Amino acid sequence: MNPGTNKNCQSFLQESQTRVNRLLQLKINTQYSVFSNTQEPDLQRLKQASAYCINNGGKRLRPSLVYATAKAISNKPSTHDLDLIAAAVECIHSYSLVHDDLPAMDDDDLRRGNPTCHIAYDEATAILVGDGLQSFAFELLAETENLTTEIQIRLVKLLAQASGNFGMVGGQMIDLQSAGQQLTLQQLEQMHSLKTGALICASIAMGATAAGATTNELKALNDYAKAIGLAFQVQDDILDIESDTETLGKTQGADEKLQKATYPALLGLEQAKDKAQQLVNSAHQALAHISGDTEQLHQLADFIIQRNH
Ligand code: GRG
Image 1 (cartoon, protein in one colour):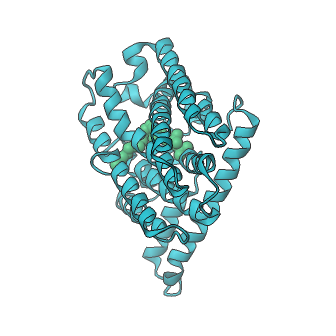
Image 2 (cartoon, protein in one colour; image 1 turned 45 degrees about the vertical axis):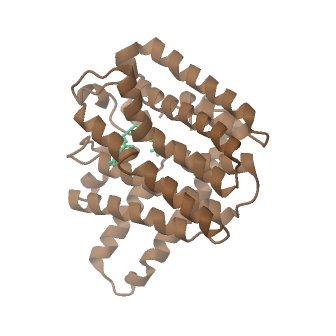
């Protein structure tokens, strides 16, 4: 955990990690239990590789946002349903990292401090792991038990839109196309709002939707989400310069090596830091419109720019 992180936030993040990790482990085991009797070695390899990519020490920021948002709105959703929603979001995130690391994309060999999936296994397996995690996410959403069908469908739509062509996939495409090119600040912002911002926004919108948020609450939370989503990316760019490979758990300096447009490259390091802080300030302001317990959302906003990996 980061040395600078508030103690309450640390324990909340740890609690969220425990909850979502337990659910994911249980569901992966259940999913494959039907095959283990047949001793099917190829599926065992897929199971092992999927577990490798899911259980490798991610911060679980997006699940934490699901939990914190739901708490800010109501205690309506059951613990199990929230765990399923949090796990679904994390599966999409983990799949995106597995595919992002592939040679055809960012071509990285280190992720969360371990060899990337295609290095530990092989490229074809890594592609299938990502594909499987993506489908698994929607299966988990379909397993929620105490939500109305209308809410379930809204959750499916939120996650599909955020991860699809007009969300994460589209953002990744823009990112790949723009390597080596000069982007304006506006273009950079648009790319990140799709590539990483959309899934962060969806985590918050999904927690809020499951908890029965009103239109006004959804709007305030969307403002919060957009601000922390962008702050997250600005901080990621800063860490790529200031941190080291061991702390990051991925290759430091990769942005520069791939000639990626970044906030520090466009604004300068100090101004990038100011921008991250301004975004977090506006996230705090957005929460003023929510009357429930927003303490954890405030802490997560701070964590996003205090994190060291
Ligand atoms: C392959 C369709 C497709 C999309 C990939 C999200 C993404 C799009 C690529 C990730 C590239 C990257 C490293 C972006 C920087 C922001 C980011 C998502 C960092 C990793 O997220 P964390 O810090 O990771 O939440 P952990 O490991 O803690 O889960």
